[in-house]
Length: 224
Ligand SMILES: CC(C)(COP(=O)(O)OP(=O)(O)OC[C@H]1O[C@@H](n2cnc3c(N)ncnc32)[C@H](O)[C@@H]1OP(=O)(O)O)[C@@H](O)C(=O)NCCC(=O)NCCS
Image 1 (cartoon, helix red, strand yellow):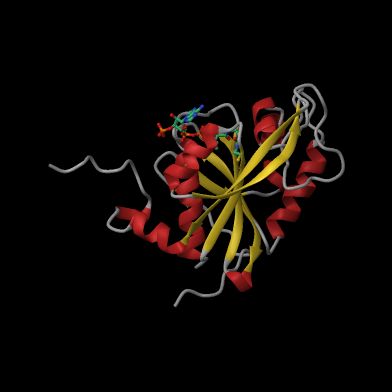
Image 2 (tube, protein in one colour):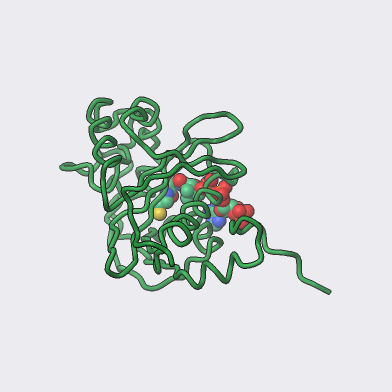
């Protein structure tokens, strides 16, 4: 029987293209410039406009950045945030390292652990190295950990309607659309819907059954 989920267990994982490494304060320096990526800020809902600052206040579920070159956290502040997250019992934050280059390209996160309901949330961002398959593999590896290592029943996320790439990657990983939070984000004066997506353990298992390593790859070609 799988033991109860325990997000204080933060394990590194290696795939074909990327390695997931538990994030710590030592990653603040390398993550800081990545967080200046305007596309990450827009698509994660961290900013309200193409030109404005990041949401004021806290680190939120970020960090993600503002659209200029100014990241709203100093390297020292980021180090504190990642230090706190490295000890958190309700989230696991991994930096995504590209194996071929050894470069950190983003982060993948399981958050808001609800141990009683065996569920949690998920978020991911990649800066500068998009559309090369790294994100798809990181999503699969994160889900594998959630369902196989942590024994979770359900993982959910929110994706904005103006982010068809992320939605495609999530659908490819097995997430289904569960509902829509209408006009959840105000961006550049326009309301944007947020879609809620979820995947259950049995859906993950049925997708990965018979696949070596449990990580789905491209669907097999249709038989004769
Ligand atoms: C979403 C994200 C993590 C995906 O990672 P990635 O490494 O870029 O994705 P991959 O290269 O593995 O796959 C991209 C897929 O999207 C497809 N795609 C690209 N642009 C697309 C678009 N405009 N509409 C639909 N699909 C698109 C690609 O064809 C590819 O599909 P395929 O694997 O079936 O060929 C990454 O792009 C990212 O961080 N984006 C910015 C931040 C963000 O959106 N975070 C998620 C917030 S919910």
